[in-house]
Amino acid sequence: SQQGEEDPQALSIQEGENATMNCSYKTSINNLQWYRQNSGRGLVHLILIRSNEREKHSGRLRVTLDTSKKSSSLLITASRAADTASYFCATDAYTGTASKLTFGTGTRLQVTL
Amino acid sequence: DGGITQSPKYLFRKEGQNVTLSCEQNLNHDAMYWYRQDPGQGLRLIYYSQIVNDFQKGDIAEGYSVSREKKESFPLTVTSAQKNPTAFYLCASSIPVAGPGANVLTFGAGSRLTVL
Image (cartoon, rainbow over all chains, first blue to last red):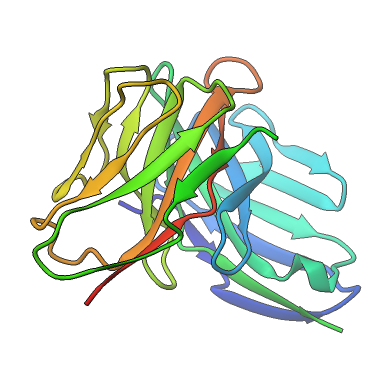
């Protein structure tokens, strides 16, 4: 089952602009993660935010988490053409040793020159 | 370099045939996973394994089988019982990177299966 739903499904911006994508989920989580996927490739982990955190930064990435609204947002500042990819949120139902990450449907980001 | 190797990258299968996708990791990770991705969709969990000789069904295990005889290897067999096997298959492994309850996945490059 898909836990997370990203919004928008597709986003097109110009280089230098900021890109914001949102994720909503349905059940309680231990943490929420964002991944990036270039076309036809595997996913790459970007950032993890725990359920007791509200905001986290990593380079040009800023993630927020609102557990009361069951939502998260990913902000990419000063976007570059190389940021063109699909971005997925994933919610973590930790089972002891393994995480059962449940992925959303993704936001396709296109950054044009 | 440490990572996850999936093979083959592309695979074509006739209806009624079983196929096995390979996944090997040299990251010394305990947990391994198989996900399926359909066009324009997110990832859905097929099977996961926490330790050698142990694995659990994910959300869409029907028509698939796995084994975990070695820590490094987690092959996935797509059987003829899988009614719609054409998809992109992703293998991943994980280790807690920020304390308990925070497993971050490392993915392979994927295997694209097409049923003719």
